[in-house]
Length: 66
Image (cartoon, rainbow, N blue to C red; front, side, top):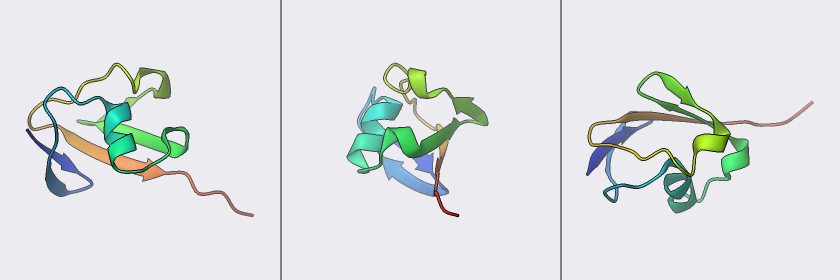
């Protein structure tokens, strides 16, 4: 299945969840903001939100500093 992640087309498994995608990309879910088709996904919903063909995903990682 094809989705777009941060402007790049990618093949992902059918029915993959946001949480599984982040794990596959070796990203820490607690440090990420995920936008799917212009809607921000709540962190509590990462495990239950399945991606669909053609979804546009934007991943933003929080960076601490001071």
